[in-house]
Image 1 (cartoon, rainbow, N blue to C red):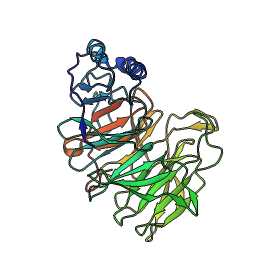
Image 2: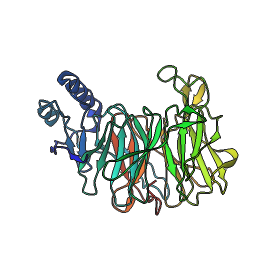
Image 3: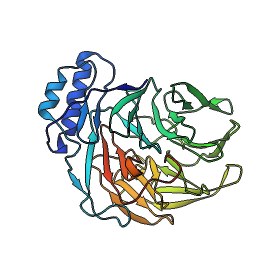
Length: 363
């Protein structure tokens, strides 16, 4: 369950080598006909090597990346990040990273969807495979009682995983129909879970033909449909006071807000924030809005094609944290929860922040 990965010290090179190392890692795994990569690294510049490809150790020792090699200095975002703060590579060589979540004890969990793995980086920076055979687990959330909630896209369900590895299905269907591919989720203080369930894409990078669904799993296990009109609902989170639900639309330009009712249902759907620097999609301009996080001041952090867009509690644009590839999800973690972690397709990044993760909850 908690298998540690080997630790290898790497020479320092610029982070532009990430894609090269990732490609070499993929070739190694394919040639060895082995299980998906155990790519790993420590936030201070050490990197775990894939099982089944021992010859890759020497190659990576030559090519080498250090997580401490900054390659993108950030512009100032007041209260969030100081000018010139470096974005750092924590580790590369994955297949499709998603779902970072920082536990209150400083541990970080994240998903590699195609590899069917959940990884863990402990408070000392040691990385290990925390769960195998995850059924394409995507978004994650750590509850106060120590269960890791996961949206299993391939398993068509929402599950809770206990610290000892037991997997408990929580939601598998609505009105007798199986869930499509749960994407992201957020738990409330009542024991309920909000989650997104977009329709499948007809082809890679093509928008779904029909809108997706947003659900609420009540504390007693009932699944309620909240919205079925967002083209591709993706990232989802709650305001600090849990009175507002936020949902991003990958195939559009807006983050939507809903007023949360006492029973967990929602009302007053509205456009909360228009995201900057959209790109052309199959249906028009799109933000590629993905995973979200909140900070202790209630600011919203949205992973998009432009980077991590920071939005204030009134929906105003605050700034963008630039990432060298399309950001897929984001979470606070590390000591004091003053490090922002970002997942891209093949790499995990981090940046130190002035802001801090939300008090009393993992995301």
